Length: 144
Image 1 (cartoon, one colour):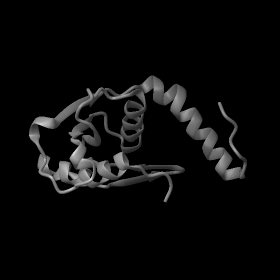
Image 2 (spheres, rainbow, N blue to C red; image 1 turned 60 degrees about the horizontal axis):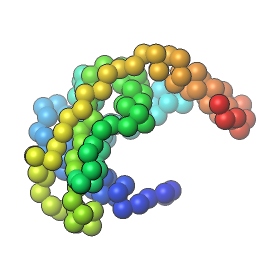
Image 3 (spheres, rainbow, N blue to C red; image 1 turned 120 degrees about the vertical axis):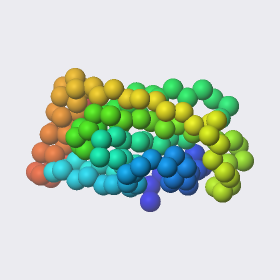
Image 4 (cartoon, rainbow, N blue to C red; image 1 turned 90 degrees about the horizontal axis):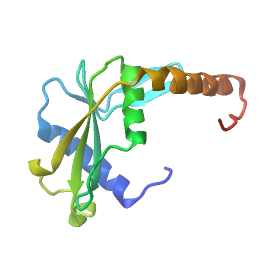
C-alpha cells in the first residue's frame, strides 16, 4: 500500500465528510481523469471548479505549500478548468484517532489557487513528456 501515517489516515477519513458537509451543488467526489500517462485523482469537483481537501493540525497556521499549489495546478491542467480551491480543515489531536467527530465550520478555510501556465508549460509538461517517453521505452528516468 505504500507509506501511510496517522496524518494521511485522518485526512483520508475526513475528506468525504468535509466535502459532504459543504453541500456544493453538482459536486462529484473521487473523479479520476486519465490522459495518456497522466492520471489525476480529484477529491471533489464540479463542472468548473476543483476542491482539493487538506487536513492539518489545528494548532498550526495553514498556508498552502508550493507542493499543494502545484498539485492543484496539475489537476486544473488535466481537467481543463481554471478555478480551484484548497479546502483546509484543522484537526484536533483527538480527531487523528477518532474519525467520527462532527465537522466544525469554524475550522474550515478556502484557499483559491491561481492557475500557473508558466509552471505547467515550462516545468510540468516537459517532465510529463520525459516520464511518458521513459515509460514507453522502458527506460529508468534520470533526475532533473
